[in-house]
Length: 306
Image 1: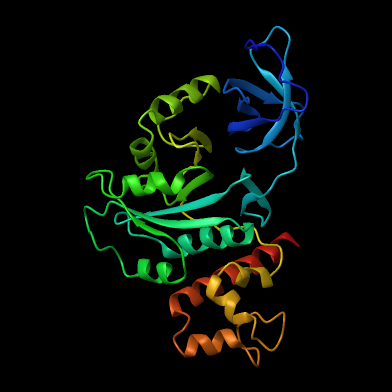
Image 2: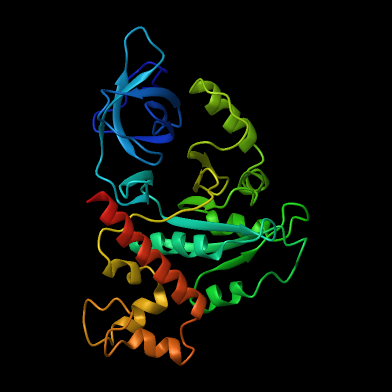
């Protein structure tokens, strides 16, 4: 039976959250319908990518979300008080975007890659605006040596856009990075109808917008899904245990298996294989500094929380 807009999903069907701005949501049913929705009560917290149970509200256009399915993973950042702020759920890939201009903040790139490692999902690094500098900065070679796919792209010239589209196919990806790197332009290059889609979501959630202000999911031509996200000036993943900071850096995680102590934080502990690798040039000074900065920030915010 073909369902109408107001008919309830089949029993046991979870709907996907494709946009979330507080308690205002957009859902996607299994048949592709897009449904405006809101949450039941103030305590139910929903993010883009969640799978939810919901039903129509009599006499209203909105559907009511009553339950969130268990999440495969969650991308969360540290808020100003050291608490986790959930950004998106059920991701398969994090695509960390930088650009020739503005000047890349590689520490932010490292922190997003750390988040992907701790979520146990794929990650890639994309450098946009290579029409301004085709070679790109030397840091890209470092990420490639760690096994991360590195793409050089340009919306202006079209370089690398097809490769980016192939990277995004057949999985749920989230595009993240600094403000001004051109994430929305990249999305429009991969999905020409994305601008219309974003405008429709804004109308459905009754909010006007000119730039990305909240995470939104876009269907891709090759069966994948892409979550756009607001640009950031800074980012730090929420990490509950100090030891887990090192687990988010591939080369540090690999070397730490040879440390004398299981809880080594790779500062001045005896028998630290990470510092040995650093001294021998097998771990870069910049990446090690990035690790130390994130470790210190995590510890400081935890003290503030206490």
